[in-house]
Image (cartoon, rainbow, N blue to C red; front, top):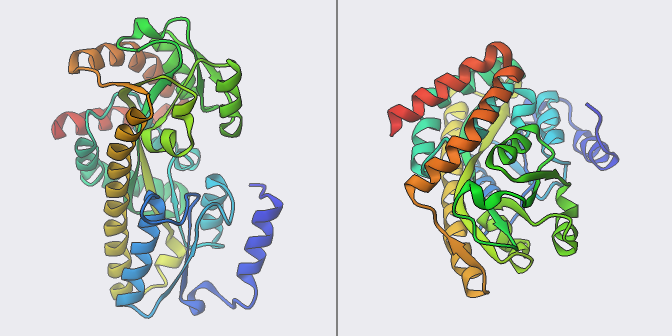
Amino acid sequence: MTFGLKTIAAAAALAVGMTSVASAQTLRVAHVDPDDWTASKKGAAAHIFKNIVEGETDLTVELFPAGALGNETELVAQAQEGLTQVAIVSGAMSKVCAAAGVLDIPYTFSSATIAWDVLDGEFGDALAEHCLAETGLRTLAYGETGFRNFTNGTREIRSPEDMEGLKFRVQPIPLYVEMVKGLGGEPTPIAWTELPNALSTGVVDGQENPVGTIYNNGLHKLQKYMTLDGHVYAADFIVISDEFYETLSPAEQAVVKKAARVAGNMGRSIQQWGTAEGVLKVQEEGMQVYSPTADEIAAFAAKAQPAVVEYLRGELGDDAVWIDRLQEAVAAAQ
């Protein structure tokens, strides 16, 4: 893994005067969201984690929000190397534990509560154990980045047919490209930093993101229509270096695990609040918001899922069994 200069400098600063992770008894918690706990799901999760751990143990928790130590991929690598102890990340987890990518299969979860039941149950526990073996990172709990939704500036989208001929900005991730292709749209991978200009100049007609992201970054001012199709539910992984975790006493481990679970639920609550508030705010500012029926969502799923599942089975190889395990867990939760 190659770190950026900012990340290398930050890591070096953290290491100054530190004889060993165990002797320092400090947990460094890093994420890329803003620090404001009232609006940031990762920010809220990090603060509640810190308060519980410091309140119930002699451990010290240092927070590094807003990408202070690098992007999510770098944070995962730093946790694996022991430069940080805890990272709160979402999509980057599938880069080191491919099985985690099955959570991005479109239209898998019909609601957040179904997703919580699956992730907090046997499937989530099994995935955590698998990823621990793959990465050396222990998943303490799951949080939430939220459901992703389509917006565009051309017309209301109620069916896959409405997406035909429209260009949608997607993350430069093959799974998202396959999803939009399956729905009949034209996927255009564009970096996040270039998205506002691409929307303003007509390079793309639309994009997809969680409601809070759309509102907080002013994307609703560049788009007229939003469809709350919730095509992908993005989970946060609260992970800790297992090497560090094993240096803690059983009592400390218990508090850390409890704090992470509360933190994950806090992040989920803030995300849910932000989504509900965001929908009202974008409507107040002139955006037209459509909430599809169950039958309409089924039509989207019928178009998007086959292409993505076929792609994932080819990419995952033996790990493709996690696709079936997820589908079984969702069916049981429903």
